[in-house]
Structure formats: structure tokens, C-alpha cells
Amino acid sequence: MTVFDGFSLVRRPSDERGLLRAWDAADELLVASLHRWRAHESQCSVRLLIVGDTFGALAVATDGVQRLGWSDSAVSHLATAQNLALNGGGHVACVGSPEELGGPFDAVLWRLPRAVDVLRYQASVIQSVVGRRAVVWAAGMDKHVPPGVNAHLAELGEVTMVPGVKKAHIFRIAPGDGHPRIQVAPARTLTVPEWGLELQGGPGVFAGDHLDVGARVLVAALPGLRESAHIADLGCGNGVVGIMARRHQPEAEVHFFDESHAAVGVARANVKRNLGGSGGPIHFHVGDGMYAYEGPMFDAVLCNPPFHQHGTVTDAVAWQMFSNARTHLAPGGELWVVGNRHLGYHLKLRRLFGNCRQVGEHPKFVVLAASVGPEH
Image (tube, rainbow, N blue to C red; front, top):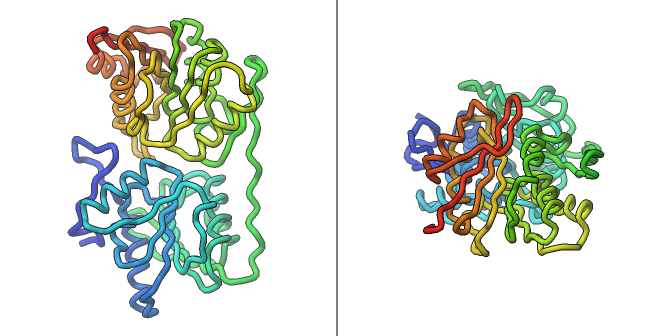
């Protein structure tokens, strides 16, 4: 028996094999802790903040409480709405920026992030929006909890570690008074002298403080990209691929897509820093790939896809990105993908497009191109 029995919860993108759940033991601990606290303290009217809900399981299981969700992931927002609709759980507002949170909150359910810089950033935001008598529960799967987590949480308040279950642990934090403001290290700036770039990073932004090898390999292949009027950087991260594509084709209209609000903010800053205002238009999109895009078709989509989601190795995200790209490519348009050789993306591209060719290589990576036929 779990707190999620009786709910119908799905992942986004869906797991067609049915092997992956939309919740885990850390979610169980968080919901159970909130229910016990409300029963013991007779807390009827509670303003609850949910941080890092992966697919909306926490929102669904806390129906009856005034809730606000904060997640950097637009996919999480969409999954939350989908699962609430499946389970009749009403509407829960989800925001991607801490400026939209307001406060104060009486309780917080917090899925601990894997990276220390993200943990400290989220802790500093939580510290600014909780009330004096608030309680914070922070939980994660043991293999994903960052090192030194106790010391970092102690900067937020008095920490009590609650016995864990199923390889998950939960911490109860009482912020109280007297704790100094949590200091967050400023974002690092990455200099790439061979390309004349200065790239800003940010907490949780992929390759925020280094240049990803896959991105290097994809950029190195860009001189072979045909002349394109409309180019998309799908899963843009810090924006380096789209920026370099624009450098090669200054008059192209370039669109940057990412599910991360932070990543799109960083990409926007990097575009301004490295490209200025000349050339064709530039657009930014936060969402689930190209799911909600309704603009002009693309001549080229450039993609450095992830091969995992929330710590789980899966090709579902990459497959969805490839499918999105095919839908929004003009006849004759091309999807360029970089990936580790062992991932076998050439098989997926041939299955989806009916063709695939290699346009760049590296000992560990390969750049592949697939084109849409004229009848598309």
C-alpha cells in the first residue's frame, strides 16, 4: 500500500513499455509526512509550496490543500496538469520563476535536486518565502541526493533526518528565526576563445559551466549546413549551438527551444552578449520541445538531445524531440543530431525519416542528418 494507490499517474513523455512510474519512494515520504503533520497539528488551512514535482504526483496526492508548484521544467508543468485532469484533482498553478511565488507558505514539499548549486539556489528561494512557523520536508532517492546535503539544509533551518524507506530519505527542516541569508555563488562565465564566445551559466542549466563535447562536435559540423532561412536549436541549453549557427548564417531567423525556464533565460543572455542585434529575428520558447509551436516551418533543426530524464536512462525524450522536429520541418528540411555513437540514433532517424547520413564525427560522438521528403 502506498499513498498513490487509487491514482492514475502517467509520465511525460509516456513510457510505452510501462516500466517507469510517475512517482517514487521520495514522493511517498513527502506526501505521508504532510498528511501526518496535518492530522497531528490539526492543520486545516495550509498554504503549500511544492518544489520540483517531476510529473505532478505530489500535486495530485495533496488535493484539498491550497497549493502552488514551482519547477524549472515546463514538462513538469504540463505533466502536472495532465495528471490532475486524469484524477479530478482540480487546478494547481505552476510557475517557473521564483519571482512568481509570493508567500508566505506554511509548508513546503521539496524534491531535492541532484546538483549542489541547484540545491543551494532553491534553498535560498524557499528561505525567502516561508513563514516563521513553517515546516519544510525535503526528500530524494539516496543515489540522487547530493553530497553534504545535511550541511546545506542546515543553512535553511534546524534539520531532523527522518528514517527512510525503499532507498529514499527525507529531512524535516524548521526554518524559524536567526538563520543568515543563504549565499548562492554567482553564475560562472565560460570563455571560448577559439570561437570568440563568452557564455553565461546558471544553476541547473546543462553544460552551464563548461562546453559540452557533443555541442563542440555539432558546432564543428555546422559549416556543412545548407543555407537556411529558419533554424531551430532544439534543447538549446546555454544556446551555444544556435549562436554558432547564426554566426555561420547571419540572416537566418533562429529559434531557441528548451523545457527549462533557466536555460532559456541563460540562452537569451548569451545571445545578447555574443550576437548583438544584427541579422535576422531571434525567438525563445519555453515548453515541451516544439509541442506548442505554431510558427513557420524550419529548414534546419539542430539537436543535442538528453539520454536520461530525472536520473533515469531513457530514449523517450530524444524520440519525442526527433518526432517534434519532423513535424515542424519544411519539405527538404533537415534534422541534425549529435549523440554518443553507442546510442544508435541512426536507427531511430531511419525509422522516422526513412533516411540518415553522417555529417560529422568524433571518437565518441557522431553527427547525423535526416531530411524530410518533398511530399511532407
